Image (cartoon, rainbow, N blue to C red; front, side, top):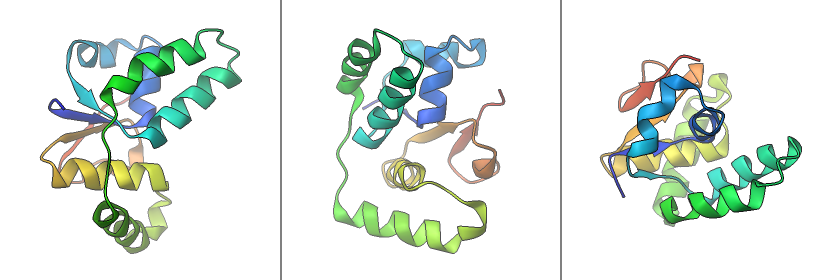
Amino acid sequence: MGRYFLDSYALIEMLEGNPKYDHYNDTDFAITKLNLIEVHYYLTKKRDFRAKEIAQSLAVSIVDFDNDIIFAANGFRFKNKSKDFSTADCIGYIFAVKNGLIFVTGGKEFEGLPGVEFVRK
């Protein structure tokens, strides 16, 4: 599973070649199917003809989550409703915390939270 959990923002920055995300290319990382959906949609919207191929290459990093993660993520999202977290990000963050992974994101709303590696754009 690796050491990191990459949210969709981090995955997209990595795929777009942002040098601040280069070192994640050489690491094992985890994502959920929700992240795969978001990244595939982003690539499809950009009319990237490789969208399916890229998404399939990311599929090896998919981790599954159980109902406890869902319930904890919704509790976290509700408790922090002023930050307007997405469901996918909350599930990823809670999954990372509960599994001892570092949650990698460029989403400012996560800056300063425990277990987060915030990477500025």
